[in-house]
Image (cartoon, rainbow, N blue to C red):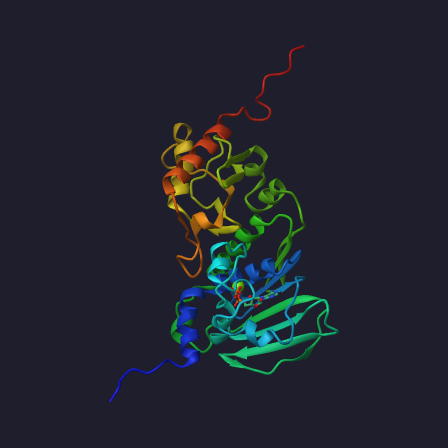
Length: 338
Ligand code: ADP
Ligand code: MG
């Protein structure tokens, strides 16, 4: 008698959800990335009880057609890549086609969406993995995704959630990371009916001021460096403005927030002469690199990357920052000769 059996689809999705959907903040990150991939210019986030009871993301992006709604919530179905070659040059934030399927297997998920060409909006719901038929709904434009009662059907996972304040704090951080990366897009955040952020489209320094603080943004030094098939830009703290923790370190590779030891080390080295060992630099840096030179597919949440040549990456970042930090700061330049 054989002992091996294929797992039921719901269980497969719930296992996958273990990797992509750890807590409300990870759901929020996936939904915000989907809104940006859909070309949204304005995104509102509404959370209840830290995002555990309800997490809603509404955007004004391109929308999903009624035919595509069942596929949007199906596992490994995506509109973003079709071939391995696409994967190797993917510029979208998503491409695995598993976030919505995973979220729908561990919550009550509802999507209402309207493509510009449609006369009305359409809705699909997934309740603990069970899909309801697509039906007409009301929505002016874009897509609204509602996630209620996260982990209601997986009590073991729900037990690992922390207090409302902790889950909210993490969700707010996920929101900030994405809002910092796209100052050209408007974002709003409310929690338990109270507005906690309202960000108009603005320039990068203004966005950094709202999210990291005026003190950082006012003195921050601009970085702009170009290499072979890569570009680094953004803002780094003036040498005198360092932090006691690493909480203001934002690095984006091709638009995606990542933590990377090689780049973090290169940045720290560039400050070495001016930084006390228990102080940390603050920065918002964007690395644009030929997708063929970096692998973002190492982790389902895509929070880590692997550079083809980490040695030259280290050197490039170190030199770019060293140059930026050695420029005289505004206000410290010598007055023009009389
Ligand atoms: P992925 O983002 O990796 O493609 P998801 O499960 O997150 O996988 O989403 C599945 C598909 O649903 C996407 O490829 C996209 O076509 C569609 N989709 C999801 N969210 C939105 C949205 N906010 N606006 C428009 N389309 C969306
Ligand atoms: Mg996605």
